[in-house]
Image (cartoon, rainbow, N blue to C red; front, side):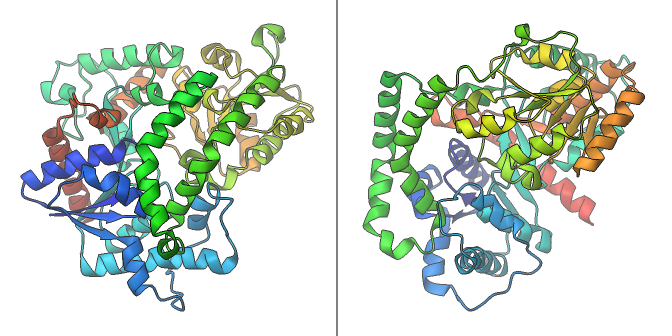
Length: 504
């Protein structure tokens, strides 16, 4: 097999993929590294095997890019939005945008023609580079696997679709309703399908699902990836953080700076990283000021009417793939909230809860606009989510994890984006505000049946868990890396074989 790795600046993941590539070569397969930008090359290439062959998109474009060639298949401007939402300071004029797409398009056209990969592996689609790679995978019937941290601790999700894993929904449909059955060691140890043709849920799986749900909805145990999302608010922490970042990134930045004039017209990714490196300290200081000045914006649940009828809308951190990729047409959160608020039945309010990691990232004007809406209430980011969900009539969200928390406790979750958990029976996939209005009205008249919620949740958690693999993406940077890369290889290769078999 020929495994093609897309190498970019994704934190932690490239370190894991580098170790995984070493395992693949030990198994006798071939690995090729496709590098998206020069700073990624300077920072991340060292984590991959020395003997591995690398192809730089930037070097290839310098030699081969044809500016007058404007062939894009059936691509739409949506792929451009993946980067437009993040790189708004860049020049997104019509010609520059087409050049940006054309460079990546011509490059992957070459890769698929010349290298003929069997599988492409990277993070889930998160930008233009990965988005166009996924597009070519679809055209050539080549599996694309995107690895990301799971909601389960010490597990990894493997997406074979742009927004999810196709096996989640399939496994959920095939699993039998919960009933007692003897434990099956192969299923319990986990792994994608694991070669087991079994539709029963073991006793141990049932207990795991029950324990996980209890801890998940109460936030007693958070996914392992959330432990890395630290925010430095103190001045000492701020200085310490950026001194460390300068030490880590100083050399790659300097290397890029020396040859920047040759690279920058082909390297929008490195240009953004390079410029943001200088802006980051000022953005952090501005954020600290906003946090102090916005303390009195949000209401506490204890100060609100306990009999109030409301829906909960959790805000999301922007810009990131969870909005620009997974909820492209709803990611203008201010506009989405306005439309959502006026889609609610009279007497109902919309409680807006800020994301804990997004506190201080939005200007005061954003909240002022929300305060003008007659039925909107701003809720503190640190309010107890479990209580909010239980008191609400449901959750309306783009792609926030609070949506699945709502479904697990028996509340309808109206999902505007494309998320991995949308196959839960209490999730409503909504594609317009008129549809949102109608679905809410239907659920208020005919309350969702939650009699078998425990069984449904058990099947849901089991279907999700069985299609993850053991591993910790953040751990490859540590000296004591406990990831079993041989097991990871066997599971991902098994998924590859299943996809190929189903394609035939």
